[in-house]
Length: 329
Image 1: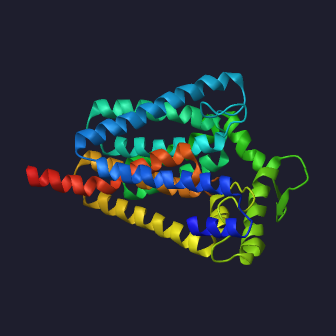
Image 2: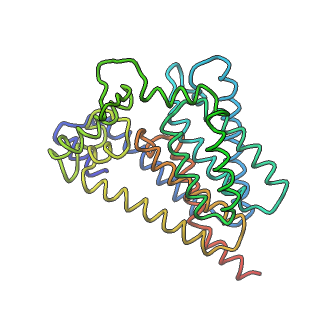
Image 3: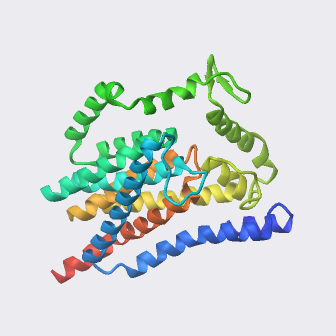
């Protein structure tokens, strides 16, 4: 990333100030991660941190619910005139994954009630974001929970009920938004897939994938154009490929693989119900974000990545903490 941007500045593809501050933002995420791993001390501390994350999501959800009667798509607080409902959807998917993971593993009835209420609170503004990428991310998240959780039967029954009754219970704003993908009136810039016309927003994302993979990436294959050296893309994977080249995309997927494999080991090895719920929710959330990133810059958005990397730090340190707890017990 730094090397790609440095070369981009040298060859005039990247403006120094813009490139510097964007790279600094990405470095901030790693600082959040390393600060987390170096300051985790015990189970009680992690519980306080998780409670703070969940309380923050509750406040964000209430603010989102407050926006619903005004019409339009729900966005995050403090965004100004132009909101980003798609990235709010990504944040809510991540937190909903953590809430569901904890709900499925806790043995406390009180915690189940609180987590269930928070999950319901999150779903209301989530649906009102009208973010199709976020809706899509829910599917792999749920299937990860279905595959890994000990409560497979309950999840399977819930899925059956949702599939059967969902079309009748789902708010019209959600079904209309999904249908819009294929029913938008004819406009310039639409792509046809067979006999089906895709709306302009989705078409633009598909076209950006095609432009990067088939044409522009080949011009700078190893290091790319540098961060901010390529035009804006609302899709994470072609953006990484365009800005950092083959080396960047390989490094990104190696990082994701390392996180995912470590979280899986933690989930399978830990006997602590709280730790198991956190790692399960994190795995489901990571898979959801990878799906969300097909149509959004998920892994560079502050509101998603700061809690994501903080949660990553917690999950990575869980085996260390559990080992220390066993030594002192």
